[in-house]
Amino acid sequence: MKMKIKSPNQHYTTQNAPKKNNKRTSLGDENVPLLSPKKTHEEDFNGASFSGAILNLSTTIIGAGIMSMPAAMKVLGLGLGIAVIVVVAILTEASIEMLLRCSRISGSDCYGGVVGDAFGNLGRKLLQFCVIINNAGVLIVYLIIMGDVLSGTSSSGVHHAGVLEGWFGEQWWTQRSFVLLITTLAVLAPLAFFKRIDALRFSSALGLALAFVFLLITAGIALVKLANGSIGMPRLLPDLTDMSSVWKLFTVVPVLVMSYVCHFNVHTIGNELEDSSRIQSVVQTSIALCSSVYILTSLFGFLLFGDSTLDDVLANFDTDLGIPYSSLLNDIVRITYALHLMPVFPLLFHPLRLNVDGLLFHSATPLLADNRRFALITVGLISLTYLGANFIPSIWDAFQFTGATASVCLGFIFPSAIALRDPRGEATKKDKILSVFMICLAVFANLVAIYSDATALFNKNASLHA
Image (tube, rainbow, N blue to C red; front, side):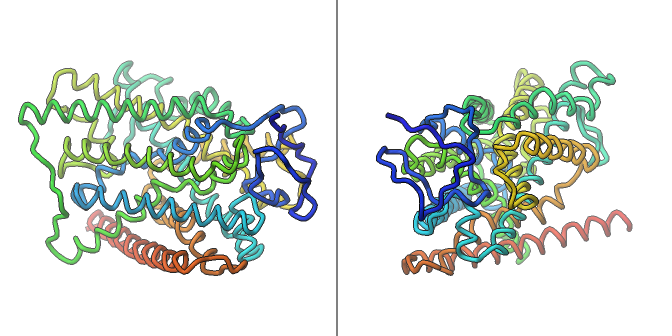
């Protein structure tokens, strides 16, 4: 018989937890609020399905990252780029495996609990801060992209019409602030108020389906243009002309790492699984699925646009594609991507809300047992995200400095540091070698990326004032 999830007021530690004889197992101690799902009295929840867990974790991974893949190929070349995608996927799976193993050993059922076991309360708070910085930045960027697609943007100094403006002209109801307000109230807020990640499995399925629609349209256009000879085969290796082009290769690593970061949701999804021992299989399946999507998007996106590929390939679909129905296909691609981001939004909002609550109200009752606090934090964070998307319309440079750094910390540095600290003496020699490699790669690539971005920003400002 399936076991019902316990009440949020029942806090068992690893010492006094009751023995369980069914197949549903706990990932550890539930007395740490960070990223730990607490169920309300009213919920009769018998555990999430394996397929639902894969949908939610895969949608967590495939967000805005899919749009940066062709640009990564532009820097690395198609051959080296695909190889790097595979390497980052393998390292991500290894970091999550170490994290889950440390969770079982330490008796913690959340990311913060594992970090707290290794580095104490200060380490847990630092992790919470990184999750907040990463997820808040990503969610604001998601809203900005939705606004750009639907209402247009003039942040670069040149106005690019949005889909609604192109269809209906400039109207008061096609303005950015109004469109984002309706999108937030009608779509994002209702999804954000779900208390369980498993409740988002159907919207996650829609989000993944829309990502595949984008991939299929891009592949179709690329193959048509390849057949009629209007495009050639892409470069397989990077174009290295000087040392700056060599350093630029490392700027791709934080972007690729950020495209795979899902660590903040792994424990929550695992705790909701009907059989939580299958979480590692969920992780492996999700990473394999997302890697396939990333590789195919990289292949066809770079094949289609070549060295003209922009940092956000979505911007390439704002021009004439040189095929029949080009304008219609452009609109479909842009709308599909904006719709794809909407189901991703609540999956990143969920850990953001839990970490803000854990940072501000660490000793309070579980968040999901306090409806008033849950509603206030949810409304507050949604409001701040909406305001950020409207009043900070161009945050890409800031996002590169903060979001990418926080993502690398969440994906590589924290799991590796836990294995190196090894508070329980269970880490293997392989774990420690791999951890040193991941930390060195992450730190070096991040420093190079920050230096490169700062130099580019300084040169851009200097040219504007010249």
